[in-house]
Length: 186
Image (cartoon, rainbow, N blue to C red; front, side):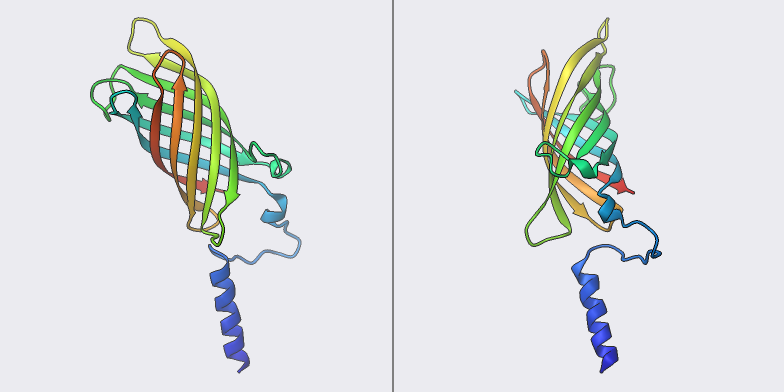
């Protein structure tokens, strides 16, 4: 009888919290109480340039760090730095001389979704500089990106991000980017 109650309790606890439950030493600080994590993200996507819906490659890599003291900030709780390569040439997803290289700082707001712990949503605002290559001179332009996304958590350290981003570079028509990426957190 005791064994079946313990098994039921263990099963209930494992289903209630996604990921792997790891035992911590009594003197180790709890990760959740610290309220911080660091994320390494790699995203692959496609731009759809307006007007015309021309598909273009969009590859992104970056780091983000959540700060416990920003949890109540309405703008965000995670500061990010990212590098993005976008192909501006005629070959869509292959590298050409015409591309843009963007370095951007951002702030991300993570929020829970009702009735699930495996899915969370986020908003992400990024500002930076885009360097456009392929012309006689490299052209540097101001960049603004605003994203809405969904995170699918596999465990405490691995997740997939799915996002849609509205992008604006000065002197370039606006465009959207649909991206999927992998994130490793620690």
